[in-house]
Length: 320
Image 1 (cartoon, rainbow, N blue to C red):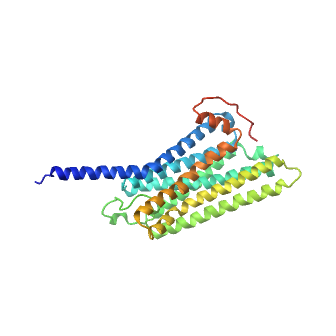
Image 2 (image 1 turned 45 degrees about the vertical axis):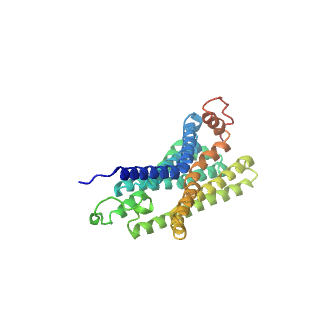
Image 3 (image 1 turned 180 degrees about the vertical axis):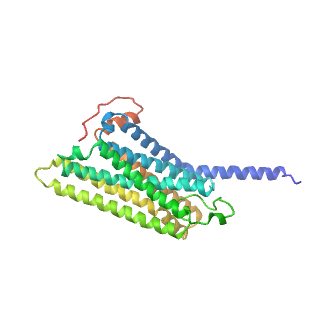
């Protein structure tokens, strides 16, 4: 029976401390901004449930659903990032659950943006019927349809995974870090993901663009409220930008793969961290910041909560 010498023990402990230091230095610059973003989104979610005007207005209900999906997506992305930084390999079932939840929330966001765009279109183009079309009940139905459609897509992905011969594997332990692409165990899964992503963003882009054009046309009408039309046009333009940011997250993995073929590991790690913050984390927080600053009703209450309730401001103007 062999025993480790004191020098060998010191070397082992030194390597462990060095590895721990590398993990901390590698993950801290990413984790701290993510915690800040999660805090802002959490305050925004709390703000949207703090007043009855938010709970009883359709566009605020839709905004809450969008922020909730973005916040869950951000938390799951950061969890997978930390697992990768700590070099922890999961089993296929655990990774599959995390990846499917990430897919679910990632698809809810663009679909919610579509519903929000249609709501603004109805508000400008059919102002007299807006109250009867955009009701709390219809908004709840639209949200249920969005989540059901996204869940159906996840179910199809799970069914495609069932064709993979897991019984031929030596164990269910993964040989790579957990990610969305790591669960594409068959060519069919990869093809389906690309086809669905193209369909989702093309259809969402066309819907938001048509709503934007419809609002511009309506703004030229003499019977339309010019201020309301101008505000709705800016909101729809914001939705287009958000949709583009959501689409940018789909190029994260292919971009990293392309970079890894031409650069050294140290450069890859640094570039990957920057791309991760810009493409994955930042877009998930922009909705809270942009809507919180633009909306005259949300802004004072959001600042009030962000400042730890140091001063109670007025609610501001009522939403249209």
